[in-house]
Length: 115
Image (cartoon, rainbow, N blue to C red):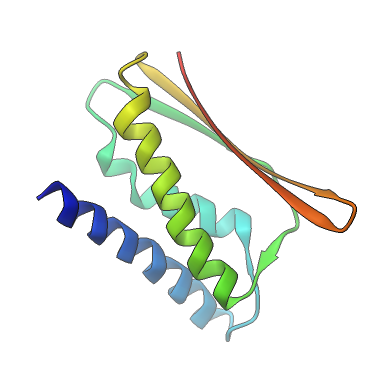
């Protein structure tokens, strides 16, 4: 059943990306908005009595349709892994997502810290 739940959450993430793209008439969408909506959709996975603090840098990165769908899966997987594994270390997790531009390339950082 756990595998089915994981697949459902991945599909929800892709659905969120698709919905945002549809509303924007397939113009690129904000990485920040996509991340926030996917993380919010996964909040039901957080165990009772535990908390997650998220920090997403307010970059101006926008994602086209292909990038949006791919990033939806990546964000879902990384955030789910934090929930499944980091709570063994502490009661609270801090998740930080950051995008930096360097020499025409983007550097993506996803960090989950248990406290």
